[in-house]
Image (cartoon, rainbow, N blue to C red; front, top):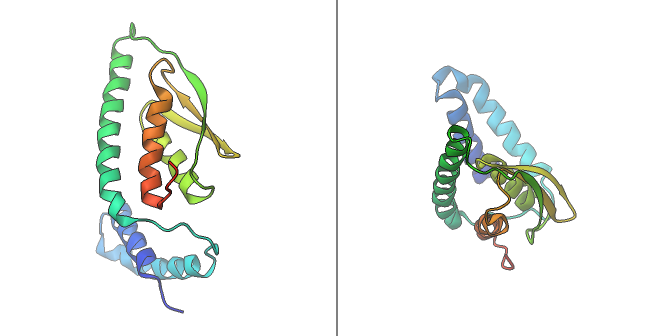
Amino acid sequence: MTVPFQSMLALTLGWLVLTGGAPDSWLIGGPVIVLVALAVQRWRPERAHSVRWRAVPSFTAFFFARSLAAGVDVARRTLLPAMPLSPAVVSYKTVLPSGAPQVFFAGVLSLLPGSLSVSIHDNIIAVHVLDDSSDTMSDLQQVEQRIAAIFGVANA
């Protein structure tokens, strides 16, 4: 059994970030990375979703820009109590296939300031938002389209 290169690369980069690249951490990190990569290959679902790596840089730029704008908005609402808030839990029907694409979508929404994924059930993601009076559905659709590009989903 060969160790998959993509898993090794992702795990190695993750380990570097977590440990700050400390040389002594590789005593544990090296074997763990190899074992986890082998486990991922062995127990990977038959129909795993492939990632289109060319879409990742565009998504990363979009995510950082969106995070900054949303962070400024949340900060303004915190510092200016007169700013309107209309918190709500909205239901968003996603066209992303179940599994990694939907879980990634929910995770990204939770990382963006002002939104938090509550649940995923039957292709519907419940999202808590700070202001439902804004164009929430359009915002969710924009994020979904970026994630669809990463997973090669054409219908988003």
